[in-house]
Length: 366
Image 1: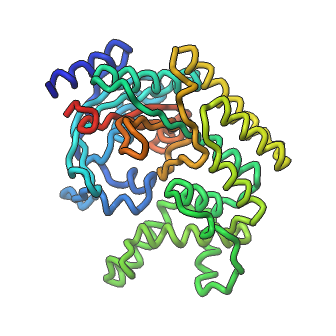
Image 2: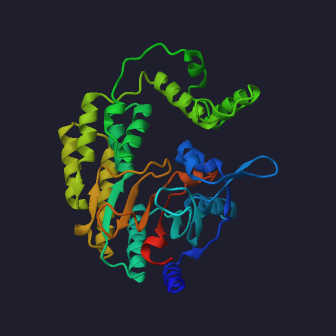
Image 3: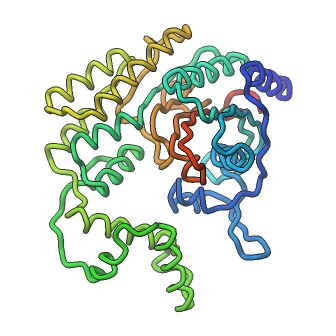
């Protein structure tokens, strides 16, 4: 039965024009650390090759599929489907499990592509016998645009996004008095520097001293903290002022179907006096996407948008979603838009992209 279910899902992908791809199980660890943060190191299986380069068992498929695309079809558009094992440590889940999914790379009709991927997810679940589901929507692009409209400093913006993604209160992002930093000279030196270079510098210093970790933190984690502090110093602090915090908290409290939610966010922006081109564009894209969903026959009125729904992964740039079979349950399918990932991996041109992944063990397909 499991094999039959997986075959139905792969046939569903193929019928829609998504070509099968099988990226290697062993992947370079660096892209995952750069895009997901050093915290992911605790949840992945890391090894080294003969030359000492760090590799990992793939913890997910999006980055490996994008690396494959960059190697085989740089600068082009393509749609991919995959099915295979992934490996990561997570409480309550096995260390190895099977994922299936799709990645659509290079399409410039953003709202239509977003609607298609969500539709493919719901159709795929139906082929696996899962018809009664709940859909939660978010929009990292809209959240970013709101913070930009509020002129939140870069470090505070990053910390705010991480707090939202972790469902933590925004107290930790509040403004605090600036004190003399014993590393002020170093922080001034690394302001604006390439994060890869700063990480290599820290690793070299620790290597010369014969140290691998300091206070339980790796060289990469130490470098990330120095970069954050340097950026805070450059922008006069890393706090979220009380007025902006109130607006962000109201945005995070916005819930409801997409039509009701976008009206509420527009009202919030007007009340806060936010006249910002990026925010206006993000709201227009939101409404256009909802229109494409409705045109596909998706039950938009049953979907639930949440301003507090965010992903703690740096590569998500826009629409995000997850599908469950009951409230607060683990996702059966999750996905979203990651327009900056291909360029980060070396694409010579911008390549927008969107995709989703199925947890087959939760769907009854593994």
